[in-house]
Image (tube, rainbow over all chains, first blue to last red; front, top):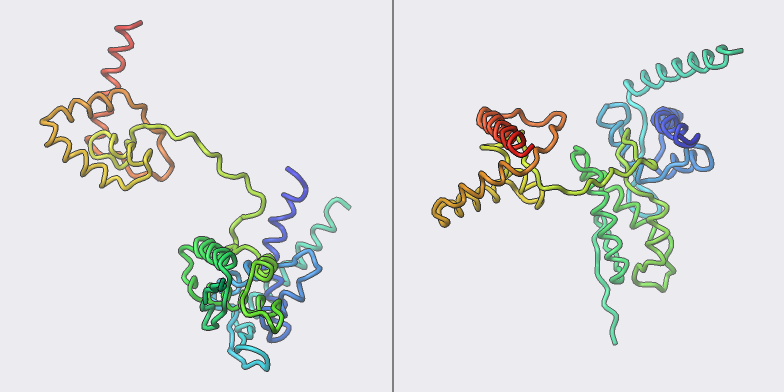
Length: 107
Length: 191
């Protein structure tokens, strides 16, 4: 198994967490999220992001509002629901704990 | 000669496509539709994607260009990427090993012995169709269909049981016992 094949599921698992973080920071629309992730290890495309956002919406973690834009059709702006904020806090906490464990073990 | 363009309505936005681009668009959307099969938000995600495609294409078109061509659509779809359902491994997965198709009988979900089911699976058609044809042939052939069925039942190998397959009914169990009994006699007789 190549290294890349081992890293892919880690990235995939963390993507949802990162999207929650981005949406949690401020109300964003999809190109904002893509731009934030572009150039990182988590660079993502719309084909992946739209299904993920709709899953998060179904789980009642994010919600969106239509906002008129100066150029083109109205846009969907996403933000976290209270349940989304709670989940983000829990994920953040868990992430910090495993991060500590990973750096403690073996040192 | 006049160029013919096709108008596609992408999430309420009318855009003109040349034929090659239109074919490409259709295949992308069909692929997306397949990837979202069973997703309760399929319609909404498809609308979002259509919107993204329309936006991306228009960004790439010069003001004097009236129709989307592959020069616009190709990079646009490249940027949007293939549709991936969340949580589904889609990265360089081992492609499902294409097994050679074999004519076998299938005990799970069989009515008699699974010959029709096996034929349906082999031909990739609805099993009901095969069964109806078999019954029709039974009447038309004046009973020789029974012999054909028996021969197939005795000769066709059994498909390996699949995890989560339908339970094996009473008659298929009996017929399988019978087939195995006959086969054991036969192999004794020939050895």
